[in-house]
Image 1 (cartoon, rainbow, N blue to C red):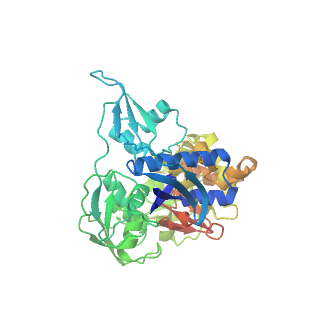
Image 2: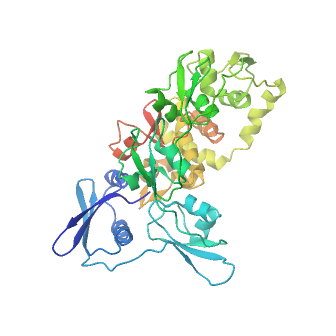
Image 3: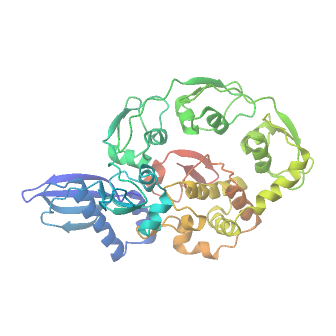
Length: 456
C-alpha cells in the first residue's frame, strides 16, 4: 500500500514546500486504533523524505508537510534537500554472468511486477531481502538473486478509455496495478469516462478491447458464469449494460465487452442429492455455480435434503459412485490450521450473517492469499500489518484469538478454502454502516450480501 496518494507544491521565497497527503487507509486505521506511535511516525517521515527525493531530485525543498485528511500530521523543516537521482537498476558485480542484482523501487512497482521482469518469483525476492510482507517503499533497494540485469520499467504510455473498460482490466492488460494507475493519474475513485486519457505507469502499449458481442440470457445464467465463458468480468458486463444489480431476466440481451461470442449452456440435467452433498460440491462437479443451481431450482437457501431432485444447468453428467467419495476426499485435503484461523475470522466478522455471507468473508481472505499484493498464507493475511496497523479489526483488538467458531463458521471456512466464492473475486469487505473510510467506499463493488459490501 502506497503511503501517499497525491501531493501539492507551494513556492516560497526560501524554497519550495511539499504537501503530502497520507493514504486514506492509513488515516482510517489511525481513527480506529488511535494516534500512530513515535516509531510509526518515524517510518512515515522516512517515507516522506524518500518520496520527495525520488520525485523532485533537483528542486530546492524547504519543508515537507504531511496531511492526514484535513489534519496536519507533522511538518519536517529540512532546509534544502540535496539533489538525488534515483537509479532504476544497478549491477552488483562485474562478472560475465551475474548471480545477484540490485534494484531501486520506483512509483508503481510491486513485487509481482519486479519478479516478472527479472524472471524470478515473489517468494525468492522476499526471502533474499528478509521481507515479511509484499509492501514496498519508493527508493527501497532490493537484492534480486539468480537473475540477469534488466532495464528499468519502460516510460509511461497513454491509453484512452473505451466502453466497457474498468481500471482492473486496463491494469491487467498493461502489466501494472489499479493503485499505480490511480496514483499516476491522481484518481480518488475507480470511476472512468469513455474517452478519458490515462497515463499508464511502467506499462506496455495496450490496445482497446475488441468489438463487443451480444448474448441472450437463458434459464440458469448468472453474470459470473457469462463473464467466465466470455473471458471478461462481472463489472465490465454491468458497466457496458448499465446494470446496478446482478439480477438477470430470461431473454434479456446483454452487450459483452472485450468478449468472444459465447453460446448458451446446453440442456440441463437432473441430479439426486445423496448424503454428504453440498451445493458447492454439486456445482463444482457439474461445471456450474451454486447461484446457477439455486436459480434453476427456485431455491432461496443452500439447504439440501437427501433424495432431493435438482435441475443442473450444465451438460456435464455425474456417475453415482463419484457423489459418494468426492465430498469426503475434498475435506480431507483441507489444511486444518487454515480452517481454524479462517473460522475464527468468520466468527468475529460474520456472526448473524447467512451461510453465504460467511462464505463470502472467508472467500475474501482466500482471494488475498492468492493475490500477489498480500501474504500467501491464511494466518499471515489475517494478522498482516501495514505501517503498524492491522488490516482487520479482530486482529487489532485481539478478538480473533478469543473467537470460538461454531459448526456453521467451520463449514463456511472449508467451503471458502475449497474455492467457493460468492463475491466473484473480491479483495475487500466492509459494513457501510460502521466505516467512514472513503478508500474502502471508492473500491469497485462486486456484490452486497447481508450487512457487508464486497469490493475489488
